Image 1 (tube, rainbow, N blue to C red):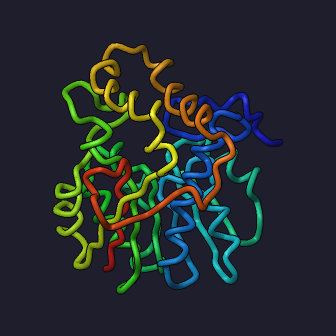
Image 2: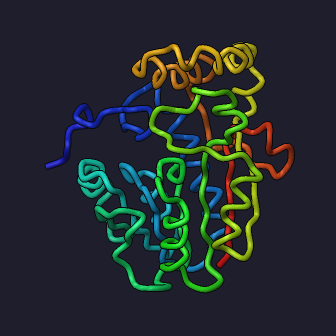
Length: 253
């Protein structure tokens, strides 16, 4: 029996299928997996912190790939299994800091918007490197602290730590010998006058807003600017990283 979608709660982190205002966030999320798909090699893929599994299922559509999604939340894994149950994808409840996999068993690993929630990021990265084969790709995305929380008390409530480009590169380089940093943004959102205004005010008003309003503000704003977002609207670049809202790291073992 499939878990009803209305039993899954949007906390500002895990995306919930079927919520109209979250469609732009879903597209942005899939764009990250599409970017990963273009760089990854091999056929056995791990998605660390898979949530409800949309990204994992997207990867499994690549010819010859099998994608495994793991998440610590049992309700998310239950939903993912029933929503995306096909021969090319599987899901397991697991702590990303203590993976139940053998050394070097995955060709590539992706982890979207996870590291900012981890109390021990060094251990999380070491565990990812352990289950990744030599020469394999590990890709993660995380908010750019310079844009997401530039002032005291503006950190997202669910985040333990955010990173600027230099901090993230330095951290990843302690585990992976090759680190390539990119940034991701949605230009039509970033250039919109309403978004620019909110960006200026956000560091000052975010600490004052109740949690329920904070988590609904961004998807509501995105939907108001353009609700029918496409993968082509999401851009990735290696230039001006300090100005891009999301950091994307490609790491080779």
